[in-house]
Length: 286
Image 1: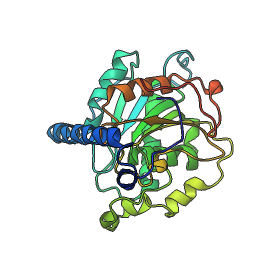
Image 2: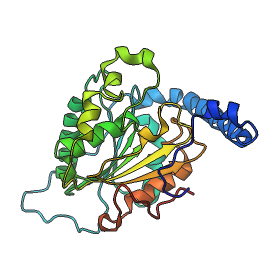
Image 3: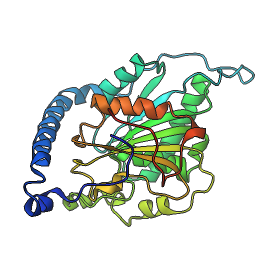
């Protein structure tokens, strides 16, 4: 799939209007739904293993006058999960990244009691500063699924985190807010993910000079994004690319092998070789 910002129309309505044309999409929807159910079942089994924080090898911190790592060394990758989830969702992606040369990958858990995206973003910033100090790198890459991508974007765009975040890859993140599941509005962090919330409006504000590269993966069958285009980064000041993935649901984005390939491509993009948010480039999901 080439980089694009086009989105499919609302599927059920189009099925009524154009049943013959969208017969293929109905099959794709059934396949994607079956895959979502299978992934959900597997993830429920793995979920308990991801509740506790990740164990990290203790290492002596580098001295202030120690030489920094060579610039060609790949920066650490930080994985940040979505709403009511934990680090176990990244089991396959983490393994994939490690097999392809990413030597330092860390999965962070934020508290299931988190009620404010801004507070979570501040905590993420402290984690990233600690990772940079511990590893000797000046910047990290982040892969955020759903709410995790929104927390990471707020840190990079609104809290000066672009000094430490080289590339932010988001998977099914409601950058402009989502209208899905209004019954969940009782939770304050869900309200912050609605269109027009204070957090969403802050992300619309000017962000001149933001140094982070944003790559957003969005799916034409993501039932949690309403509208579908909300998973795209659309901001005149941000360096961004939006990558459409076909036939993959929301839960499948962090585990699908084709998406993992696209994530690796995104993390390997040179900052100087990316167009603006209004452009498309050579990033593909095969």
